[in-house]
Amino acid sequence: MPPLNRCLPALRRIRLANATFERSIARQTPRLPALPAYALLPQRRWQHAATASASQETSNEDEAGQPTPSKQIKYTSDSYPDLKRDSRFKQLDEADVKHFKEILGSSGSLIDGVTQDAQDDLEGYNADWMRKYRGQARLVLKPTTKEQVSGIMKYCNEKMIAVNPQGGNTGLVGGSVPVFDEVVINLGKMNKIRSFDEVSGVLVADAGVILEEADSYLAERGYIFPLDLGAKGTCQLGGNVATNAGGLRFLRYGSLHGNVLGVEAVLPDGRIFNDLFTLPKNNTGFDLKQLFIGAEGTIGIITGISVHCPQRSPAVNVAYFGLDSYEKTQQAFREAKKKLGEILSAFEMMDGAAQKLYAKANGAKLPLEGEYPFYCLVETSGSNGEHDEAKLNDFLEHVMGEEIVADGVVAQDETQVQSLWACREGISESSQHFGGVYKYDLSIPLPELYDLVPATRQRMEDEGLLDAEDDAKPVMDVVGYGHMGDQNLHLNVVMRRYDKKVEAALEPWVYEWVRERQGSISAEHGLGLAKRNYVGYSRDEEMIKLMRQIKQLYDPNGIMNPYKYVSGG
Ligand code: FAD
Ligand code: MLT
Ligand code: ZN
Image (cartoon, rainbow, N blue to C red; front, side, top):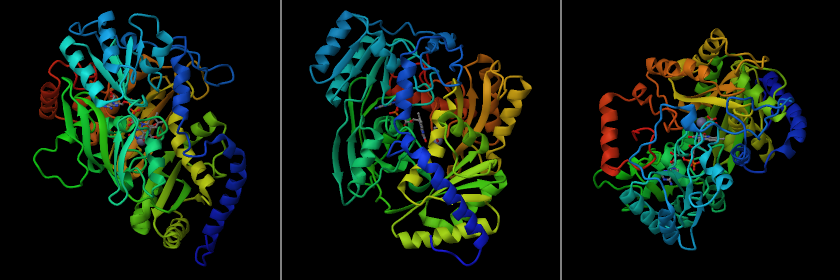
């Protein structure tokens, strides 16, 4: 960055920190995947969990404080004994398996734990990423065409066989894995890009395409997928749409409700819902595809999507700041909007505890020398590097000169961009590294957004559940981070082991706190199983009734993702 005359001390601080950062990065770089950081970690750890073998109530740490992957997750039905299997659903038998084999033919595939022992192969489809939920599916189906999905659903509907649609199984609310013996329909084999229009930027793809692969395909053509998140190397486009995922580019590109132009889905009775429209405007009555965006697999199986993808920005800058208070973090956000305007593409907030947790779990050194109670990551993306740098300099000069931020670094190359992002994206992985995590993904008005974090820590202390050092206490720490630009807080209660006393102290207390501030109990992760009983904290009776009516209309037999939100059971 060119030197600036005004505010020299501030820029020296940035320069100094950069130099330190460059030294620390030399050690960190080999640990980071080239692009994008953290994409594959969830899948690796999740596989460990799936092949594990001890109880959820026992510690997941070995003596050195490293996670021991060889532990087994408790069955959801044991953790939540109030959940009862719906006796209307058929138990699978040999004839069912034979029928599904005929539908799938040689192209699709099937994991059969009905007529043989397939426990090991099934585990990865039954256990979730947080190692909190574990189902008992005995059959996994992996269709390759929408016609196969249709045949499967028609049969399941006639026979009253319950199903659980599944994408990359990175969901954070327990929606992606069965509760009992629901058949898992995994979309991973429907993974083709169908078309891309280089003029309009409209991508049409199968639901099973991995987000990162779609984004790489688009990058080669100068475009970008309008969604980015830490699980991009594993999650699928169908799962992204089914959860209406938010992520790191929301501030810039907005919701999938706006970007998704079309949806192709198979309804519970096998009918094909064909709305794979590819134009931005279509004012012909109810926009029914919107119902599938965020439905979490409760009304149909998404098999294809069309999405409007923006032009990829050639100039990307990332800055990372330390701040002395939440108040200053809000000021920095205000200034970022004012000074960076249309090139601001992300504004992420992390508290000091979240960054320490990341450093501890990864043996990483943080970019800044000092410790701060708050950090933020600011990204700009634009089409003109010089113009963007001038704007960024103006912003940096201002926030450093006014002492809104205490210290900061600006990435000088792509490796540093990735390393700075890793400090933010790596928190998710770190939060469950030591045994488990209770995750709360909340919309809260900005002025009060952070208040919930110290309030939760206080509550855990008052209940005698938290101690950073004492392994006898189940809670290690309470951390806060999130998409500040979207008023979305991630409150994470970091566990040594899952513990019902902690859950009881947090729920519904957290949801009451959020309701009092007119927030939402789910900003972007959805409801799934975790929040099925708490929808009423964010939606009134009439809205819930309408949701149930829609569910009844699309899925009268209730076979789609039962026991989850809106599904009954
Ligand atoms: P799954 O987990 O397999 O399924 C999620 C839900 O969608 C389930 O209810 C399932 O039944 C349903 N479903 C899946 N595929 C289909 C389909 N084809 N048709 C119908 N229903 C289907 N989420 C965010 O919003 N923002 C983030 O920043 C973010 N970061 C994350 C970081 C990490 C490290 C991890 C592990 C998760 C993160 N998530 C985030 C959560 C998760 O990645 C998203 O919810 C993602 O969209 C889920 O996609 P998936 O393919 O893994 O779906
Ligand atoms: C994130 O923003 O990192 C994700 O939503 C995942 C999480 O909450 O950990
Ligand atoms: Zn998030």
